[in-house]
Image (cartoon, rainbow, N blue to C red; front, side, top):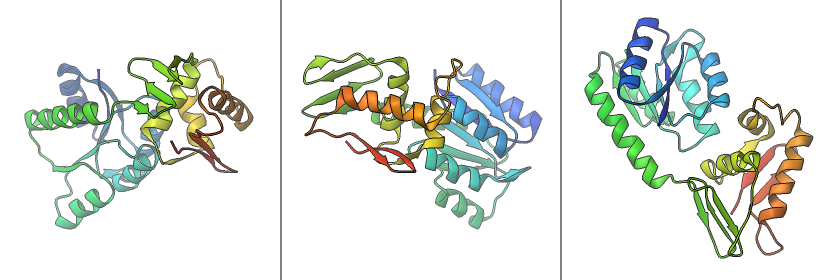
Length: 223
């Protein structure tokens, strides 16, 4: 099931869109402000965002840029009453996949979502492979030098974040937020560093480096 985040401050429209998405078989979470959307995003797995421009605590453009910084490949679609050409250009320049003006056809929106999510499922599969390391997180398989390597649930979540954001610098704060769970495993940067080092020890050798520590800032998948 694909999870979609709906960010819309009109409660009636928010509920109507969420209902239609749920009826179509999607998992849905919703927010009515930028602050609420950020809190949800760092705690839930989200595969697409439907976003209004006019929100009570700022413009959706700001949130879209922040989302793309966290997860570069995340599709964002604007649903907005802002119908000027300049507004649409700002939307696309902020990183959006599409810019749809209200009122809109729910049937057409659902078709757009289906196309985008099917495309991303084909192109964005969480796989990495070279002569030393093979990772397929959809199949929960990691092999090192052709030998299956056991990874913990925490390490699997780490790998997911690194592969989704490969080449992107993930700050300590972003990783702490993304990897936090009900067990409270991560409470500080030291605990994060210990878990990253354990993962590196399993995957890396002198000739193969995959995770770079950008001192004082965060980590980056460089494989």
